[in-house]
Image 1 (tube, helix red, strand yellow):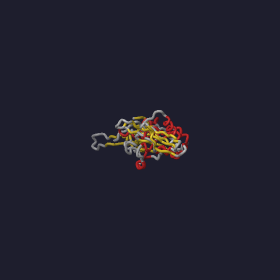
Image 2 (cartoon, one colour; image 1 turned 90 degrees about the vertical axis):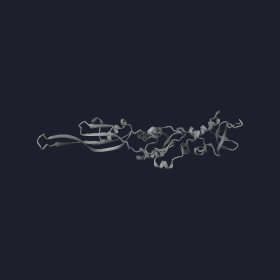
Image 3 (cartoon, rainbow, N blue to C red; image 1 turned 60 degrees about the vertical axis):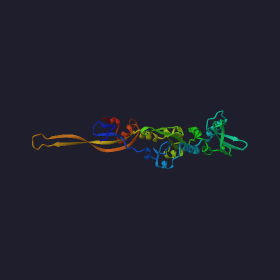
Image 4 (spheres, rainbow, N blue to C red; image 1 turned 90 degrees about the horizontal axis):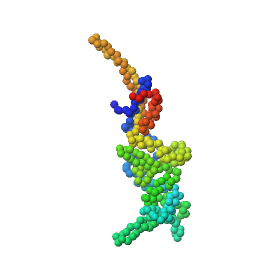
Length: 301
């Protein structure tokens, strides 16, 4: 018989509930239509849905670039790019945005660090033009900028302040034996990236915009906790049973022994439910309530 993790019996001995670890629990994303989106970036198809597997981005950088195209806070991005142009020192692959008065264009540039050729002559240490815009500064969009920026510049923009409130982005990583950890930060090196889109979430949940604005992705999306529990094998189920008393008689027709009668208790299943995701200590009240029991009415065996 399968080992159980906890068992409770009612004080009158008439009912009991037995809690088991759910060894065959499904990925909780397969059992809900919660609008959480996930893309595994460093290993194949771990918690992605079938649709996500078919249409996933080619890399974390491309996914974040897509986010900037759609939800980039262009004012904050331009502020950083213009400050880079005015800085005295530059890191390799820094990007900047400058105005060329002779061309009447804004130019996005990338810094090329210094290097020597085989003769010892120094090259680089200069800005290299990537793209120009014959637009007013206020008309340049995040879409105009994102695809031309270096990987290191995209990495620098992996922060909530560089996005509008239309999206909340987080990340997840994988540990040994399939464990999963979620975080509200993200980067181009993230093993997985997850996100919620504001309009989709508000329509699904019925929550007010104030709720969305006041919380991080992890505080909003309970599904991340269930996924972590699933990865930790912290998923449970129960069987509820009632006691059935039976009298067993033993007859000795030879008359050499006395006939005997004994009362035995057998347990008859009355209900069960599986798929409780989360640490048992935190889930026990929910499990007992779902089974129709109150903890104060029970004795743990």
